Image (cartoon, rainbow, N blue to C red; front, side, top):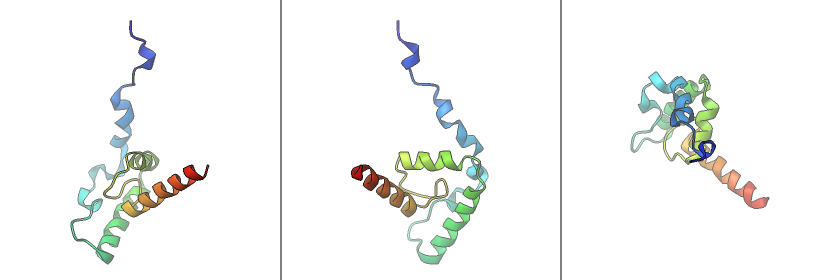
Length: 98
């Protein structure tokens, strides 16, 4: 008989936090830049997305998930693509130094 304690938990338990996201009812275009968007337009859009993230009850869960899966696009957990890349790079340097 299979050892049930070693089986993964229900998938819903892993993702249920997303139902509480402040972005759930927001315009998704706010979180992902259109092709060719640069400069102040991109910065304003990202700042507006981050303002929604700042009010989010699951900001930490979203941020950690985006870092774990190395989410390449958009604002996740209040972090832009460049901010996530910098955190991941720092984590890699810290891990190598230890």
